[in-house]
Image (cartoon, rainbow, N blue to C red; front, side):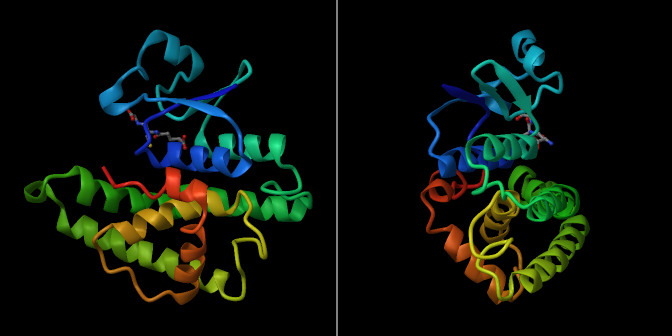
Amino acid sequence: MLRLWGRSNSINVQKAMWCVAELGLRCERIDAGREFGRNKEEWFLKMNPNGLVPVIDDRGFILWESNAIVRYLAETYDQGGLCPDDPKLRGQAGQWMDWASFSLGGPMTTVFWQLIRTPDEQRDRAALDKAAESCRGFYALLDRHLQGRDYMLGERLTMADIPVGAFTHRWYALDVPHGDFPALRAWYEKLRQRDGFKAHVMLPLS
Ligand SMILES: N[C@@H](CCC(=O)N[C@@H](CS)C(=O)NCC(=O)O)C(=O)O
């Protein structure tokens, strides 16, 4: 059976677990990271020398990095579905997955840490406002992309939706001005109907 190490409130764990749920795979999730510890122990560092979650063990095959995990699971268990057959579409899926991590992810992490993990009196308001403004710019871009599309790559959910979808849930759960983005909101409402999204992404922020 597939095993995954990582606490349920980590966005990177959420991406992987949402993917697992979309694929209908049986998976044992073991809490690790922050208050659960385990991730700096020797046996864990043998799996992931970075000491970070998530990590999966798929019948002896160890893999870390959440986007790589999503890509591996989609390719292994749903080629032609979550993982598109067409190499061009697959390339675009990778493009949006990397964009979520390397463009949107930076300011989203600042907003999340400032609002959820930093006590009010220690908050850096200027950094928070600047990051939130930057996020609105990225969500405006996403809104334009989603106009006329049901999902990131067109008519069906693919692995391209997973990282941006997880960030978008956080965005709407964070207490900042979100901007008026109808296509983004319509896509997000579709994600909210999915069992895997409900179970693994729509969790209280902590
Ligand atoms: N690029 C990595 C980042 C992994 C990462 O930073 N994980 C965080 C949780 S989101 C972590 O393990 N933090 C330490 C901890 O929870 O103790 C990925 O996408 O998997």
